[in-house]
Length: 201
Ligand code: VGL
Ligand code: ZN
Figure 1: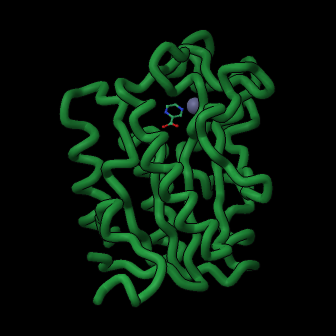
Figure 2: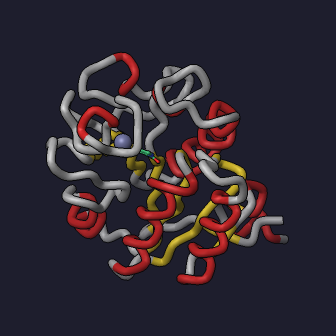
């Protein structure tokens, strides 16, 4: 059963699959590694159709405003060019994936992959009209990316089984998904995303 058919105009957005957000990382998301296999499956589906695949990364300077030493809420994480900022090696990113670096200046934080980046222009240049969003963390960068995608006018699918939450407060992740849906995002299960109409029969 495939309810969603990928076609030209679709793109995959993989949010912040970096070591610092995986268990053991500086800002490790519980069970964050569990999203890698489902995301690799999504990558296969999009790649098979020649559809754009975007990977965002948190890319902070050493004195970033979101770090505790500067009065921010987080421990230092995802410092540009550090091992913790690298994409997980198990993530099967294709060589032609579009990498979007965000929050790369000291004074500005950005949870959204659209914030201060050229993501919107990159998508429009490829005539993208619908994005499928997955990655880390549900309650921060995924939530804010999805909110901006909808505001930018992109139809937006979310894949909850391919995201995990920081859950500073228990339930933050669930509430974030509810908010995304309330704003117009459509939640889909991995098994619902297919490549051709033939798989419906
Ligand atoms: C994120 C907290 C701080 C995220 C980034 O990628 O969700 N969360 N910086
Ligand atoms: Zn950050």
